[in-house]
Image (tube, rainbow, N blue to C red):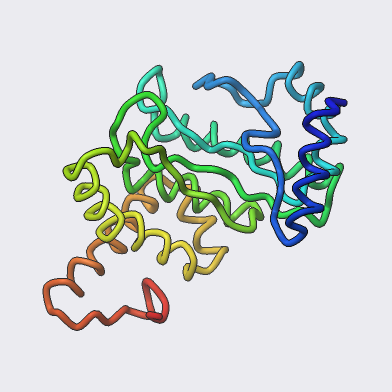
Length: 218
């Protein structure tokens, strides 16, 4: 047990008892190995030794960061996210069954400034919903929004891709989402359908949602 890390959790929960206190990136799984099919045994052993941390946390925050290069295909990114998320869910089951699992996701790739593709958005956030995560934290750093151009680009991305796809995932029945993630062809069709709906609303100026695709507007 690390007394400083434990003490920080105790103090945080004492001062702000309503906060979902926990440590980002824990539990770990693999260090960006594109061909991995299971978590490394050494890391799984370490996670069991960190049971004290998970028991003391109000929420668990595994990382779903994905890489663009380094041998990562969309399928490999999906598998990487899946393994990390499953390890977080296993830690919850073992150590803290009432804690929500809220994975962290960077809106860009870990090794390039490229923003996440629509397929990778659905492959990570959709997977979180299918496997039983209670939500997700989508974040970035100040360097991602340091210029006016970056801010405008992200605004267009959030309004035209990220936001609509989050709405799509929130309203899609879980069984249908599971089938969509199981097939690359269905996944691409689902993404195209969701984004086409947004473009149609923008063109006709109605602002209306299609219940069939996105659910009711708020």
